[in-house]
Image 1 (cartoon, one colour):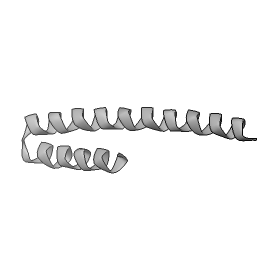
Image 2 (cartoon, one colour):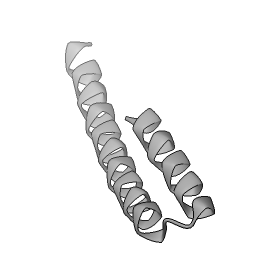
Image 3 (cartoon, helix red, strand yellow):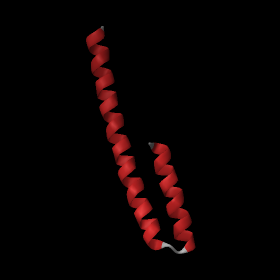
Length: 57
C-alpha cells in the first residue's frame, strides 16, 4: 500500500510541475487517504500480532 502512496505522490509532483493543479490536488488527497489506511491496517495488525503472541505462550 505504501507503494501506492509513493506512486500518487509522484503523479502529483509531475502534474504540479506541468501545471495540472486539479490532478495534482486529487492525487495528493488520494495519497493521504491511502497512507492513513495503511497506518490503521498496520496498527491493527500489530495489536492482533501482540495479542496472539501473549495468548500462545
